[in-house]
View 1 (cartoon, helix red, strand yellow):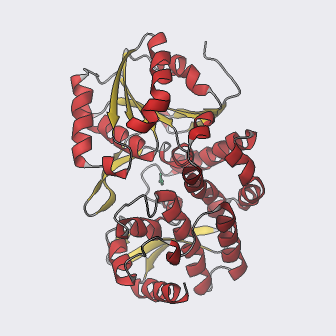
View 2 (cartoon, helix red, strand yellow):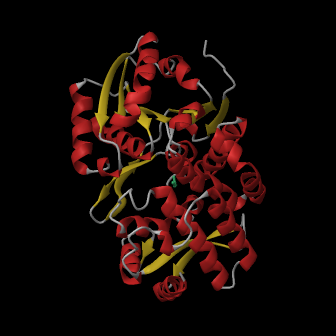
View 3 (cartoon, rainbow, N blue to C red):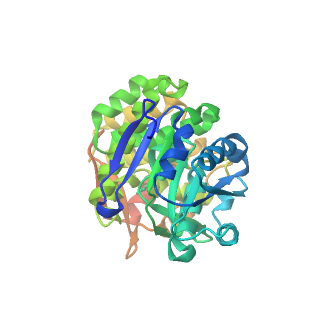
Length: 374
Ligand code: GLY
C-alpha cells in the first residue's frame, strides 16, 4: 500500500509511456514503495556530491526497505557535469553496478543531474527505465518532466541528447527548504513562465503568492502542481517538440545565448536567471514590434524584479560580451532554421506564440537598443 501523505498527482498522458508526477512535502519517505511498485530489483541513484550529502541516505534507505539493491553514483555539482566525460563515467558506473534494462536509474538532484542521468539511462543498454527525484524548484516545475535529457557540447547547451521519459517523478517540495534563495528565485522564473505562456490567472496568482511559495507554505505545492499540469498537457500533445512544446522555450533563445556568452559561469548567471532576462526581453521585443501592449511587458518586468530576478543585460556581472557575441550564440541554438530564428513572442501576458523566421537583423537592432539603454 502506497502512503498518501497529502500528495497531489499529475499524470503525463503519453499512452503506454504515461507516468505520474507525485507532489508533496515529505513524499521522499514513500519513495521505496512507489519505486518498488515499478517492479525492478535494483536501482542506481545518480546524484551530485552536494545533494547526495543532504538526501541520498534517506532515499537509499527507503529503496532498500522496499527490497531493491541500491547503488550510488555521484558527480560534482554544477553545469560542468553535463559533459561527455561525466556522461561516460556515469554510464560505466551503471554498467559496473550491473544495472539491467528492467532496473531503474534514479536521478536525485536538480536539472543537471536529471538531464545527465536521464541521458545515461537513455543510452546504456539502449535504454534503462528511470525515475526523477528533483530537488530544485526548477527541476520540479520543468526539467524533470517531459523526457528531455542530454549534455552540453562546446557548440552549445543541450545539443547532444535524447527524449527518454521517466516512469515516475517524485517532487518532494520539502526538499526545497534547504535550497539557497538564489536557486529558488531561478526556479521561479520557470514557474511564472507557465502563467506568461497561456494562463494569465496563474500569473496573477504568482504575483500575489510568490512570497508564500518561497517560504514553503502550502502555496508551494500548488505552484509546483499547476506548473506540472501545464507542462504535462503540453508534453502530452507534442512530446517531441514539433509544435506547441516550443512554447516552453519562452525566454530560452535569449537565455541560452546569455549562458553561453558568460561561459556557463554560475557566479555570473544561472539558468533561471538567464531565462528571467530572456522572458523580459521577449516581452520587450514583442512590445517594440507592436505585438504586445507595453504595460504587459512592464508587468512582467515588475514581477521578476520584485522577486529579485534580473531582467536587463546590464545586470550580468562582468557584462555579456557585446551584441555580436550574443547574436552568434543564438545562431547555434536548436531553434535556428535557415539562418532565421524562432522565438516565443507574446501578444500579452498569457498570450505567447511561436514566431518562426524572425529576422536576425531585427534581433540585432533590438539588442543594440537594449544595450545602449541599459
Ligand atoms: N524545458 C523545456 C521543455 O521541456 O520542453
